[in-house]
Every structure is written in structure tokens, then in C-alpha cells.
Image (tube, rainbow, N blue to C red; front, side, top):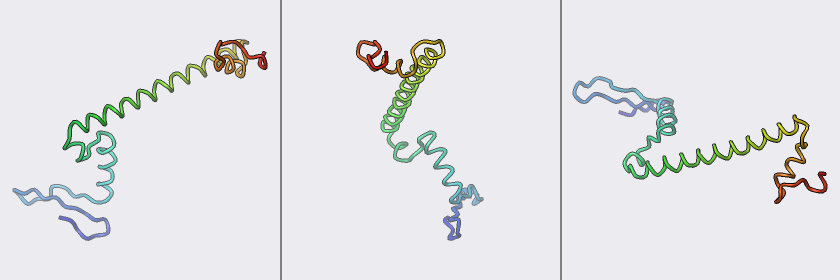
Length: 111
């Protein structure tokens, strides 16, 4: 039963006993959508088509894996530059030039 109050309350009743089963308003529906919808992809269109749910889960998982790998590579390069600079090796600019040059040698401007 949908009420015409400012919070657009919905009431759900137990069919056998007629007792109130659930009371839902805008806030509880939004929290349910944000938590169940975004955390477990509990959307009707995906739940009705299991293959579509699996495709979405795999795509999101692969995107997360790609993000993790690229973040690890970038962090590894940054840590190596910091270690080189701290140990008296190449400065940050020289290390970046060495990484970007095709043969790995320092450029003439940086030497």
C-alpha cells in the first residue's frame, strides 16, 4: 500500500495474517538501492537474466584487476625513483629520462 505522505511511505502486509510486514519510505528505499544495488548488483534486470549479471560481474572484476595492476606498476616505478634519489644515484629527472628513453641511457641534456 502506497501512502500519500511527504515521505512516500510504502506499507507491506503479510497476506495470511494481515499484519504489517515492512514499512519503507524514501530513505530506506534509497539505502537499499545504494547498498544492495551497488554492492551485490541486486537489480531486477540483472537478477532476471543471470548471464547478464555474470557478464557485468566479470567486466567489473577485470576493470578492478587492471586498475590494481596499473597502480602497482606506477607505485613500483615511483618507489624505485625515490630509492635511487635517496641512495645518491640518479636524480628524479634523470631517472625519468632514463625510463622514457628507448635504450635506457641518460639523455645528453640530463648528463
